[in-house]
Image 1 (cartoon, one colour):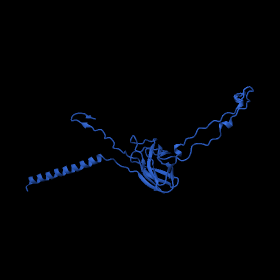
Image 2: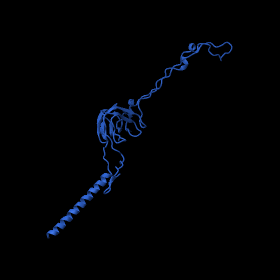
Image 3: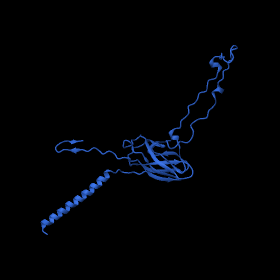
Image 4: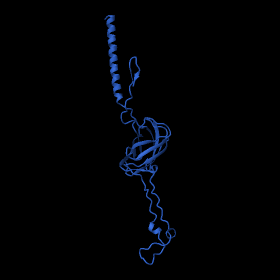
Length: 239
């Protein structure tokens, strides 16, 4: 084999290898273009309760700014024979955490006070009726002297979100997502982006407390692609 033939064979091998690498890279780019980074919700077990898929919701604007609020989502499964209740949630990255009942669970306790008395017993006129018309007489004394003031009814207090306790029935589960009970981390102390970690502590009435490291969720749907920029030869770029 002469020198020119060797050069031709070597050049052919280089070109074939380059084409194979290009095809392999193209396949990888095509696949990853349809994929998104996943941050699966964390899981934990405390007593008879299993906490599944716990994470912060993906922020609507792509980032939680300092001072904003974020919803904590999870599913709590009670595998025991006795009910339990979520009584509080705390996190070092939130000024406060509120819990409110949703469509799939109710807060415990009653907010309706007992009645204190009837109006008929607290106000009775003291004037005597006229002699000429029995049964239709009107009191002759002035209103300020003849009857005691009617009682004022106090407004019925409504339960505040931070006082809600979410019951977890035995052999059942409660989903803290969508229209279920809402756990809100309010007044975030720092900026949070998707994938960043934070600590939360869940306290249950029977099972006790558990502290977990969770993440800010990623979008559940594919985000729109960024606009492309094309550059014409000898011209300015166009959006």
